[in-house]
Amino acid sequence: MWECMLPRRRLDSLEHDSTLIALQAALRVYSGRPTPYAACHGFEFYQESNNSFNVAMFYRKRSDQRPHILPLPGCPTPCPLPLFIHLTRTAVPEDWDAECQNPQSGPGNEIIFPTSSLAQS
Image (tube, rainbow, N blue to C red; front, top):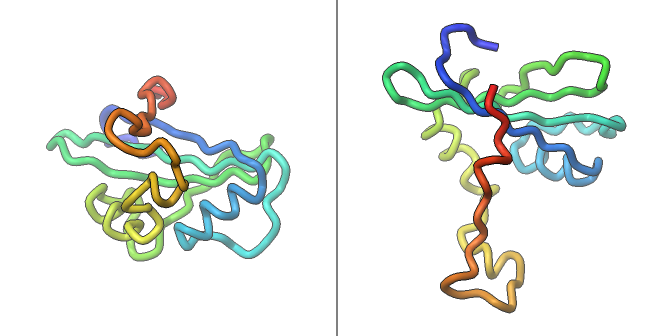
């Protein structure tokens, strides 16, 4: 959406309504209204020419409409990545194994997110 930005990656969260509401509530952007069918919460990650990184969030309520910008409270849009991480730190578990009650925790059982899940735009 910002023409001055260089390479970007986009991650869309296509979830059940309750999962999407939980994500938005954790980010403090939930409107309090039910999530419509086919709603989508998107994240775009940008690398600027000075090698800094920014994040922008978008929300699409209906599949026949374009997404609108969803600003993170306390952060400009796009949000500098270090500030985004700082503002969302309480929504991210420090110990994933304990949070998920993983019975097979320990070395070699890390959660790895494949980079192929990020759509290059």
